Image (cartoon, rainbow, N blue to C red; front, top):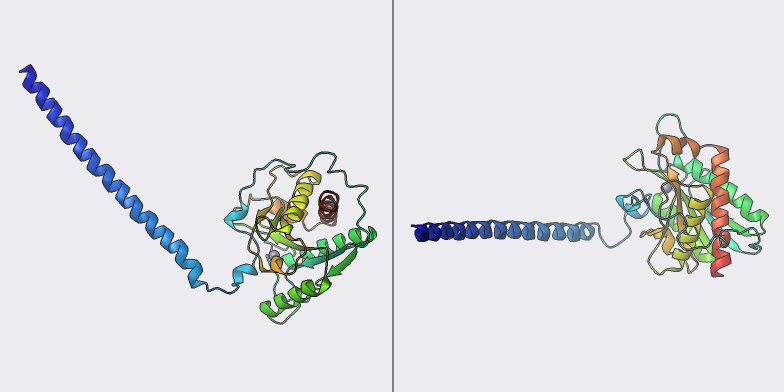
Length: 278
Ligand SMILES: [Zn+2]
């Protein structure tokens, strides 16, 4: 009896194992099919968007991609590097691009706040003043509220022409971010591709922003396929100064005081780039 019991026991166990094996196989099969479908959709969506530049290229980098926030405050530079007081930028030709303008307001702050295009220009002009005081030759893509063309495409082409014909030492585009999660905050810089000359500039400005503004949730400079950063051979980066969708930061970004601190940190980031990489 003992033997039979044991045999039965084994038999049951075996059939259970078979059942379990089938279930696991089913799960693996379903997961594989689901993964294949997801990969296909991920492949399909960009194909549908076409090969040319889409509106995404004109939009702000307020994507999930910009969300990984945690990073060391100073990634690549020593404490000594961060002292840029003696750095000479005289004669450096620097293009400052205030994003949006005219009929394109960029992000719109809730309530009675300023639009992104206004804040971009205000910070860009403060940055211009600081750099010119240091003897830099600053080229502004726009100095008024007006866009550079009647359509977004023409506006873009006009900005690209300025970059292409300026033979500048660097290009910095000023924007403000937004995100569905109102808690997202902090400045972030973007460069066009890993290994590009823009990466060093983006990292230098990023680290100086985190350092001088004492950002409590520092972000990292990350690559993004922005059309404006692809023109010319100079290092180019976009600075998203902060999130207008964050009530506290959005309010700060509209004040002269924080804009001045922001402009100073961007200027010092440019000096850090010059100090370390030129
Ligand atoms: Zn923008």
